[in-house]
Image (cartoon, rainbow, N blue to C red; front, side):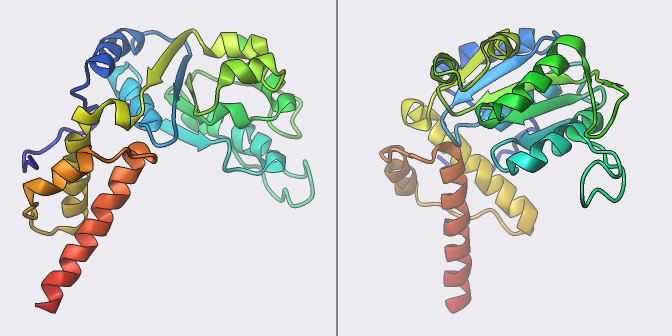
Length: 250
């Protein structure tokens, strides 16, 4: 059933026993300073889980910074992470800070960590071990105090065995590993996320909460959702746009 009940901000929704048991662990992990590795398929909710960890911790009033390492060209990723000093390379006309500086005393999510090239993995290892980094073109190190959370949709163990990911970095980041099962293995959560994204849509667009045929949820729960939670969000947006068009055509 789709409900009009308001969902609390930063609440992590689940009715799945395995995910609920993991969340019990998360509440204990959140208060530590240790790195966390979140694994799971694309769209399974890794970013939301990382954000949930942040807001369960003592760092919740500090920044939560998300960087998708797979979305940034290799030649620009180092500068995005660590910042760059003026004149470090052609086009560097001024100093710019990186994501680690922006995170300050908060939390930084290194999404798709498995896509970081090997030469940058060595520099990231120094960050994890020594809590410091060098901006591109810099000779003076900068200290960090951010909590590091890494996420990946790849088989990181296989990447280590194939020498595509540093074993020492893997063990540093994998102090706590949290696995998010795909949505097809947690069908009891489909209605929860469907409801969540409808709430977000109507709040954003400032429109009345729609009437949804109960048969819609039955159809949704029998679909395998290869795109996971992200696909649910896309379906909600398409449905809401379709309802709006139908209403105008009447």
